[in-house]
Image 1 (cartoon, helix red, strand yellow):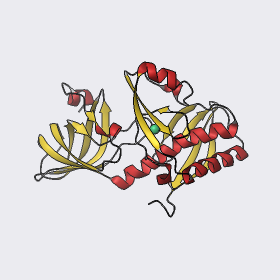
Image 2: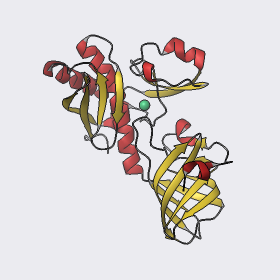
Image 3: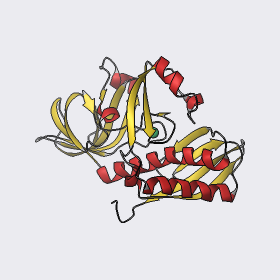
Length: 257
Ligand SMILES: [Zn+2]
């Protein structure tokens, strides 16, 4: 079934994950159910903690359930302000009404660590190469990378980027979010690495790692760099259009799980 038909006439979903990134479970109201064959269904909720695929961040996974049914959420899809949850029926048949939502938290937390590390790498790469960098895209599942315009930096600059990032992680800088008007955002974000890719929005959500430039972003991040553990720059892969992908990984250290 077309997403446009599923979302037709539905109110915009309240995106809880934009404000509360640490929520792993919540209650919501199922306001529409569209079965797909006997095994799957599309669900629309009044509010959601499931981050849909977008902005380089993969879709959250998890469970939506009540006493009568349980759906394994495989994908959350953003369609014109409405988040559509698609999943497999494990038990019973989903109906409209109150439901419990539970995220696959280990996966989401990994994505949050990677997402925050990606912003940190933007900052540290700019420091290491001594000029502003411009991101082209990113992907925070596998393979995990940030794309940048220009040619591949020297190996020395890559090692310096990694060292700077891990120093800031050791210093446990905080990460905060803010909601700005479009005018406030234009003023504040001119130097952001993804400024050129910004859509025109009424309200702009920014994420700021303490000590770094604010960055416009709708994704989920950890609230302190210490949660990242350790970041490793794996390699820089040159692409044919004078851009490259910086592949990286995050790994837990003794102080984070
Ligand atoms: Zn972000």
